[in-house]
Length: 380
Image (cartoon, rainbow, N blue to C red):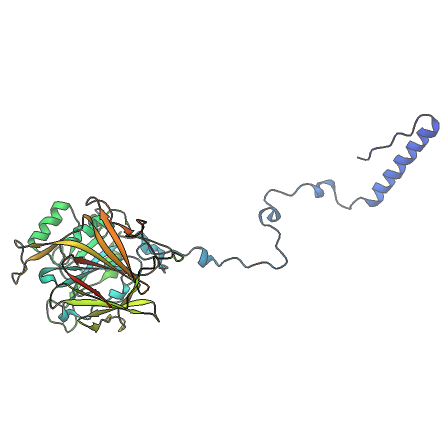
């Protein structure tokens, strides 16, 4: 409202006051908007103008929805093409490394790979599949070993293999470990294929096993015994790793005749696998097998004489509960680590030897070498 200035008393003042009111009213009538009073009421709370700030003269485009909703694989930090796979149980598949079984199939599509010694200190792979699809058959698939119990308890994975020794099966049963054993249970996902001689020609269909999960069948009763996935590392694309020492290649010897290793390729930023000095390829892709990180875990190994293989060779038992040393090979450098695992149900913790801080990795596939303390590791 307009406020009238006091003009005194008497007829003159009253007349002046009336004149002012007339002028004001006339001005209001001439200048008022052509809308009703409701049109100038406050906007509704749902109005777009109140939810979205006014754009600047040169607005910056918002990130695309795909960038905002990107999902990373918990086992290696890499983007996941099909996030629905993350709701399924991770599979740990026993894959052979005998020369007559090479080249293996789908090792390059694993999200993480373990390698450990078996009888005679030759090695076997355990490939973890969760985030990436496999192509065709995977393998050759071979029998499980004692350390599969540790991976099941530590990570939360469902072991898949073809047989096991009597001693291993007894240990699995005592621990309550579920095992998709291709020899028993009438599982339909295993077949012999290719030109390799038996027993190096047995393969498994990982995608068929994945499809069976959640169907209510026998495999779901096994999957129910698998703990929630517990990734051993966290990943950060912006992390800066300790400097470490420069390494172009490393070779691991578990016996005088069994040797394998990795060479650094600065152009790709990856490590390339060699067995007995020869570059390893994946039969699916025809390309060299490469990874971002090679993790060497030094462990105490026990020779088990009472549970020999068919040729009479004693088995190997790795002690993965306890503590010890290790080395991370990443970015062409070697970084000293410590590992510890207090109990069988606990996860393995990795820290930097120099600082004691927990290890955080750049995204990329990890190849985890479980190496006996007596084995030789040579860097060049």
